[in-house]
Every structure is written in C-alpha cells, then in structure tokens.
Amino acid sequence: MPLRSLIAESMNTDNFKYSEITSIIIKSFYEVYNTLGYGFLEKVYENARMPEIRKNDLECNRQFPIDVYYHDCQDGQYFTTYWWRKRS
Image (cartoon, rainbow, N blue to C red; front, side):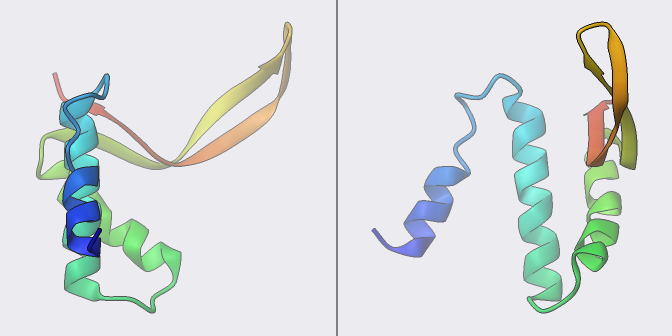
C-alpha cells in the first residue's frame, strides 16, 4: 500500500473515543512537519505545535506534571510532553 494511502487511512479517527481531539492533534503534527520539514530537535516541533493546537480551540500545556501513585503512596511525578482538553 502506498505511503500516502497509509497516512490517509491513519487520519480516519472516527473510531476513537476522542475522535475530534485526536484529529486536531494529528493534523497539527502534519501541519508543523510539512511546514518545518525534518532535521530539527524535538523541542522545535514541540514549540511549533502549541499555536497550531490552540488555534483549533484546544487548551494545551507543555511539560504538565502528573502525580504518580503506587497503591496509596505518591511515587513521584511524570511530566507529559503535552496535556490538552477541549475549551469549554
């Protein structure tokens, strides 16, 4: 199967629980990648995706801390690359 067909197939997000948000996130990736091309450090792409995601009505934070628990004890923190949700 040609790469273009595989990409188009992967863009079909109708079967995901959060299909609208998933579609925005995937499209933002392709917009940034197609504009910048390859070869930059991850931070460059991470920074460029923020305005793309926000202009599509998602609230987005980078390096968002999430507490990690093992049983009833806080075991530490995990920092996500992105954390987003639909704006109310």
